[in-house]
Image (cartoon, rainbow, N blue to C red; front, side, top):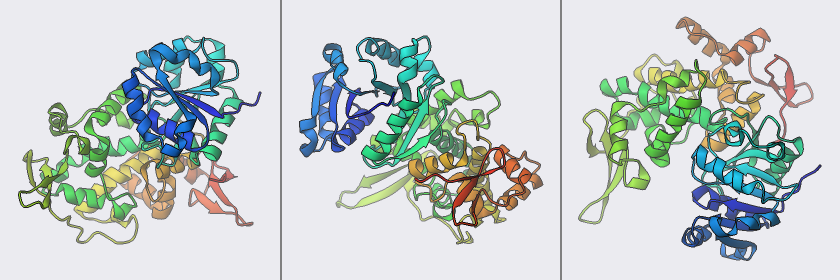
Length: 432
């Protein structure tokens, strides 16, 4: 049975819920916004453009949950707590009408845990619909089915996300943190640990951020600037979730907890931009001017920000990974390590490399997704460097070699772009 989404009930109107509500209203949908209190909903309503507010009704979860019967999509966007989500799903299920679809906007809790023990009706109609913040700006829309989710439900979400909301739909699997956050958070959490010896040797945080930015096709926030944008408290929750749900032999298990200095920052509330400072801050001086400061991770004191030292860093995209310099070793360990990690996650987190590349480009604003970047660098050079270190070749790099291919993407004789499949065959890249 085909499903249509023309109206949306958003349960939980925090940052993500209000963003989903605002985007849905802007797309011309009727929207119901529910939160615990009237005050919370009224505050969240500010996210909706004035010209769209005639499409929005509001209420509270304690008093108005039964009104979801009039809406096609029930989107749960409450706090990232498994028990709380399951309690709400139990209340929602008898209230929604047949034919509606339901989802959780969780950023990393597996769907199977949220829906464990529920009946077939819910299991057929439920999925993860994971937006990135801010919803109106970020293109990525991760769509994750459960084991029993009906194909028509996924089709309805995909069509709504692409056609109504203008999002880039990525099909992920029900694994911890899905695609974008699985790889992006590995870059950040592993980076905090792998950067420590370079800091001890005198490399500044400003230089580390600069090396892990434009030279490898990442945004200028680099490592520390990106975590300041997200918040150490959020990264702490991500790490705890990963520690519980990552497979036993996953390389990410070594990086789920913060290094000592970052843990102390977390404990005293030095979280990032939203807390007035984390790894960096802007200080207003008595004369009205502003000064950028950096929290030095070696001395654990604030100091004036300095210019990064990129002397000797190659200008060609990604070439720094092969440079026999301190910056080259840093880039190879942190960014190269992330590329190797991503190359070992297919087909665990997605059925193909295209969904992985799009998730990272659209969710973290990399210039190239991991496999696109491997093509830029030359997979044979990466394989040779791993082998020279005595490392294990990740699954998709091994599949590339077994297929006798030199890149993960190629142009066919008729001009179509193709990608290498897990089985070593070639398939057309679907339209974005």
